[in-house]
Length: 306
Image (tube, rainbow, N blue to C red; front, side):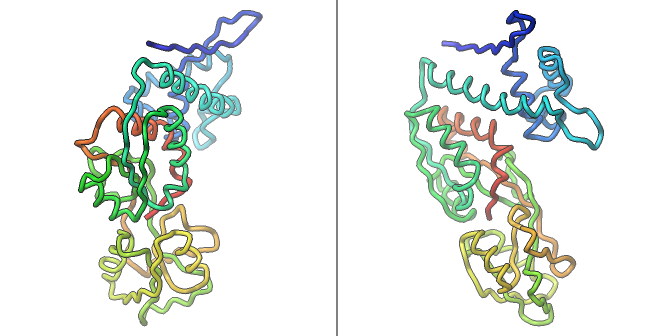
């Protein structure tokens, strides 16, 4: 069964203009990826094809959606408003397709996530996925990234959502977000690099910690681990209290936390990825990956984890 939706606007008393689903998806891709070029790459379309879809929307609504001013905002006010409508329209469209299809998906997905991920935007994506596919069971395990990677390698998981160093990204990884890693401290903490430096660390299965205690000491600094904590909130609290220095990604560096410049080796770039076990790419897993890919770009960065 193929379900087609056409959303019409009444203009001059006649319902003769339509908002095409694919064009709305293009608009949302531009919002998620920050421009037409990146949206085209994400959608596997040419830049001209994406631009054409947007022009069709603009013609249907008789208004500009993209600001098209160098250095200015990406969208016009009308474009921002349409993005809000588009998210709801596309969500309802996809929910109808999933709910009315002849062969509803069923099965079990074993998903591994880092602790903070479970409370981030991906939780909303999973909630929507379970509503779209009520016969699919999602079983979730949470831990530090190295544990999640080990579970995936041992085929104990079908999908893993986690952070990795940028140089460790695999060809089949779906990159959800990229970030930077920083040495940080409280503005009130007196950093003396000539003495052992109190180090606030995630636990032993955190790749931040492993890098910090190896390459992070390559300039002769001596890090003395005084705290181990599996949660980013706990590390943030310890930093603010002036207990020592830590490694945090950019999304966890708040205005009351100071980035340390020119004292330690520069940490590698990091990426937030969704990774699947190759042997587990069944229709149920594919559906979840597509759902994360569709919505994850704009929601995942609400929280990032080590």
